[in-house]
Image 1 (cartoon, rainbow, N blue to C red):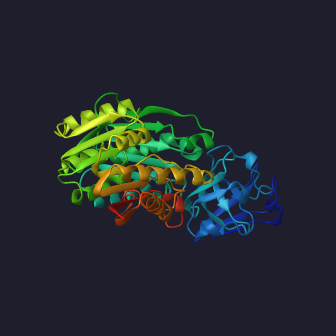
Image 2: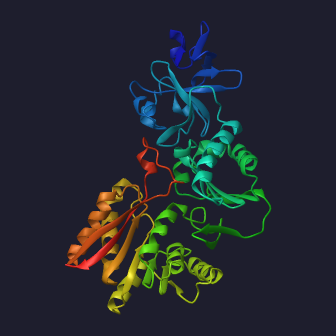
Length: 441
């Protein structure tokens, strides 16, 4: 793919003295001046060009989708001339077009690539196509329509997450580019899935980095009716507006499936339990007693309701408490559990927080081991991208040695296949965990 531009067109705000042509295969496009350099024009697409500096295209050509602000050639395409979320043609320093994306001049990630080549505009048609591709994978993986349907960059829609709960879809938009085409996304979801409701839960912290407001609203359908997540033959009532993230964490589903081998007839403690995903699955697999602990009163009440709904209330207790304080109290009371599950929120949200966060994971693992019965099972998880898998396991090992215990790592955990990892984008591989056997030294 080549962008053939006359010399005058290669300077910002230059006037073209002759026709400039963009060629993609047999398709020919025109290029013309614009306030942001060159505009690439076809019968269906008219996009300002975002130029990259010399050699800054290698990562994109290797498969990544992000352009950082220091990689943009601001002499040829000044960032200040773009609107947040505006669609652009991303072009390298040799005038070769890489593809179509969107830009945000206010963000460290200045642009995200959505489509390679210049054949497809960032519009409803492209979103419908990407949704159908994503849907084909999920329908192959799961017998029922309960899963993460779109996982951002990994499904070719950077900045967009969609979770499906039967006939209800809950979405999160994290970037200005996706916010700008929210109506087109809504139309595409309705066309492909025909949901009863589409909720927008746009309250993630990353939106502040994109200078976007936080809000939640109903994008399609009428108010009313329950929203339910189904997992492991259990039903969990969720709140798509007041709950965490989209209301449920599908990424741990396959990991919770692993509990069947470890919990039958056992006493189980589920810390950071949220709606009881781990704990209720353990009870359904035959645990004799399950205690779910969460700091949120609403989550504790929802766990109790979900236990009742699934006929597990006689074996499940939900307690509101701070996890660290509760574990210390259990240790002092000499309480012991056969299985302890630790699935905390991210302790390391930024790279600079690694030292403090890794100490928190180690301390949590120690506290969990201190309330384990002899020859007990510890489930330790982290959803922090900045916490390497090896470092998490090392923290568990250090905690064990500090307590004069030994650990056998039995199962390595990762996010489910409805959260596919993009091999070129390390940030898409965030969830890690271990099922460990803890023994006396």
